Length: 144
View 1 (cartoon, rainbow, N blue to C red):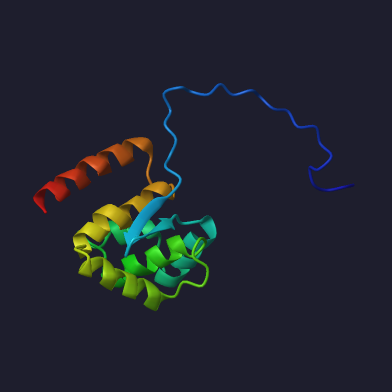
View 2 (view 1 turned 180 degrees about the horizontal axis):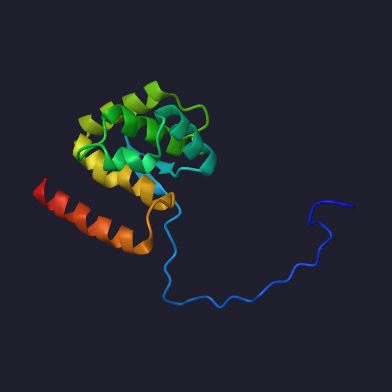
């Protein structure tokens, strides 16, 4: 007996594209010092982060009491950029955050404009959840 499905006939069903379905953005972006960085968590990086933090990444949002600790947000940002910025170190991300703040950014703007979009493009939210989150983030930005 042979195992595996390599020689099996593949039965496919044509799927009609739903014209109303929107496609998720490919990346979140963080601009620091005139350079734009691509951010997105891959499955492998999500697993690394969950192992490091000993919890699901959604728990970081839900159990943070409003805003996750900066160290966690920066570590997640490092993970989100390491696929495209090879060799990026945590100290590099800390220095980038310092530059971001020098250029007028804040921890709150980092959370709303950089950190939460990382979750969005990485597949953590359904379309409805994303719409609700966008609405809430806009309300927070108005209060800033």
